[in-house]
Amino acid sequence: MSQQSLEHSQDRRPTRWHIAVFLAPALLVYTAVMILPLFGTLQLSLFRNVDNAQVFAGFDNFRTLFGDPRWSASFWNALGNNTWFFIIHMLVQNPIGVVLAALLSSPKLRFSAFYRTAIFIPTLLSFVIVGFAWKLILSPLWGVAPNLLDLVGLKSLFVPWLGKEEYALTALSLISVWQFVGIPMMLIYAAMLSIPDEVIEAAECDGVTGFSQFWKIQLPLILPSIGIISILTFVGNFNAFDLIYSAQGALAGPNYATDILGTFLYRTFFGFQLQIGDKNMGATIASMMFFIILAGVCLYLFLIQTRLRRYQF
Amino acid sequence: MSKAASSLPRTIGAHAVLLTYTAIALFPVTVIVVNSFKSRNAIFRSPLSLPTSETFDLIGYTTVMAQGDFFLYFQNSLIVTVASLFFVLLFGAMAAFALSEYRFKGNTMMGLYLALGIMIPIRLGTVAILQLMVASGLVNTLTALILVYTAQGLPLAVFILSEFMKQVSDDLKNAGRIDGLSEYRIFFRLVLPLVRPAMATVAVFTMIPIWNDLWFPLILAPSEATKTVTLGAQVFIGQFVTNWNAVLAALSLAILPVLILYFFFSRQLIRGITSGAVK
View 1 (cartoon, chains in turn yellow, blue):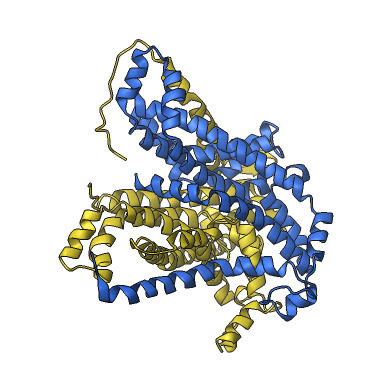
View 2 (view 1 turned 45 degrees about the vertical axis):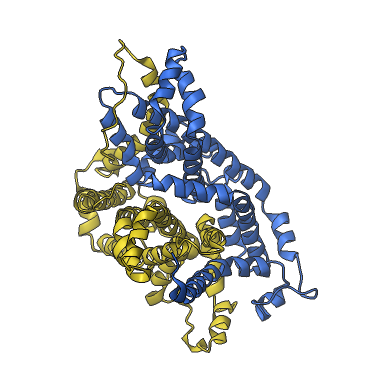
């Protein structure tokens, strides 16, 4: 990003209005609908509704969120679940994506366009479709999953995964992995295509082929892409909501076992069952999500990205 | 480069892995679509078989057609997606051009400011966005969604497009200037046509999340007249949980348009993604 080396012909003119004209629409919409509300939300988290008026409350909302046992239990539960959700993505989605991309990018592979097209299909579907489709398939009522397990003689392993507290979150994470594997696959596939043939040929001349070629030549070259994918996964996961909401509802059952920060925010902001919605507590949770994501992004930018070596060909 | 002996087993292995994963990727979609054409009994008795002449049944589709306002939802989604896409591409390209073409005070700061939105999701501002929309009377209008999605798509669009615009040759633009073209004409006539592949990449990355989003339609525009397909399907399926024919048919109806579009555009789409990411 910090490539400022490209020199442009500068011709100094008094006021170059066209620059302002080019920038204005994007800046206006972006600032008004994204940046200001973001700060507005941070600000709302410092206020409290007293007799229908917003009163400045300092960090009281945060104190409630962490101090009140009911709030803090929900918050830590959601944060813990969210972390597990992220870990599963990192451990399952990204390695599968890398393997698929590595296989797809081998030069003489036939049908690679077909595989690419097919594997990318789930990524295009909306969470609602994915959530319900899997809910139906895993449902003990319908019996697709038990039937399939029966085919390989493992019917005894069947459990209604989405309905059991101990499995539901993992099952949902894997469903989300199933949906999004296409993205790391594509990005890494693209990174692999950009590795020049000479490098691969040189490796082959030196007798480095197959798996060790992947491990020693290609993997180091695609590390920056893996870094980008990791941070994208992080931001996407800590901001997820749709899949859980469409598969398990706003209550993120069973017994909040699949509650993540997004569903927690939704419930707090809009209320549910006996609890009425609370704008300020909603803003407080959104602010916490903001800080978590910001911390992750900063960690990535300052600690990881600067250490990744980029190769220029 | 002949790697005679070891290459055949390796190729077979590669195909085996890829085929297995393709099956995993396609299986749920296939099961849903195939079963939506079966009668209720057949859905439960043999979920894994294809519909036969006895078990073929369109009851699910007739229920969905009679109940849901799917055509309207579809139209709403289309309007929101196309309009947002148009604004993201136009405004994004304009800003990217300004950032990549001209040296001016605050150029880098401006670039960083616009890039902020790539990492920080717009969802976190929801509480204040809803307030803003209530204050401006835009709740339950498609305009609210278009505004939000435009803002959401802009950061990535500006980032990708400015990378590409840096590669457009300066000579070409300067030749245009010498011929007396205004800066606006240089942008619209010379630069925009040259970055079309990048625009396609941005279009794909922008379009999919907008079409599939559930959060903002649920919060900003949940009224019957402004429901998008995603929200409509969610609500509809929620009401018909026990009517499996209808649920499967509704899911299939929501899947099919995406699949049809994808088969037409998959080549451009994949080329767009791969070419975009290489740079």
